[in-house]
Amino acid sequence: MKEKEQYIIPIFVPHLGCPNDCTFCNQKSISGQTKKITKREVKQTIEKYLKSFKEEDSYKEVAFFGGSFTGIEKEKQEELLEVAYEYIKNKKINSIRVSTRPDYIDKDKLKLLKKYGVKTIELGVQSTNDYILKRCKRGHTFEDVKKASKLIRRYRFELGHQMMIGLPESTKLDELNTAKDLAKLKPKIIRLYPVLVIKNTELEKEYKNGEYEPLRVEQAVERCKELYYFFNRKKITVIRMGLQSTDLICSPENEKSEVVARAIS
Image (cartoon, rainbow, N blue to C red):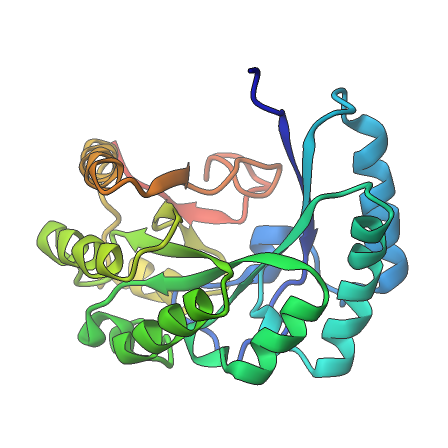
């Protein structure tokens, strides 16, 4: 039997809910959005994507990316989720996914997401090395990752993890150890993101001061490849490697790019 085509409807909520700025992060630059999303815009985005999908008999999912969804005030979460949930009830989409921080997960938050048909929760882990997390000003620890992952699985959501390659002071061994730690928490999916140096971040200052050097292209590719095969052996699906290229996230040579530096050749 032919597998259904899968479509994602991305809704960006840049930096909503985030308590701090990680050294590498500028969600507004990454998403190209600078203002808060409204329920009207959510509806317009969903309608736009539904009209563009070619396969009628396909699996469609609304995904709230950026920021920390469960850190947004409850009323705003419900406002956004209600719009998407109407499309689930009308059988126009199949599910919802959200991205959030490990320290912004608890029973009440999970009950709210369950109420509105959320199926998948992705945690921005980045590393399981507490020193590296502190170095990047993540504001959470690996213990938070473990607690959140177990709670998400207990409430029968599909668990996803996001990790980064080439963080400041992170080595190939650190990243392999992170992969091993995450595999023990049994995520269904994972995203691998080699570090990009984005404008107006602390990491940009470190890069310009010679305190941080991006991985070479060959290093980034080799590390991603090794991690891909590791997760594949553990039957954990790698659904993405690297940020999607856009008008803003592209070669630093492009004057419109928000990327100051990427893996160097």
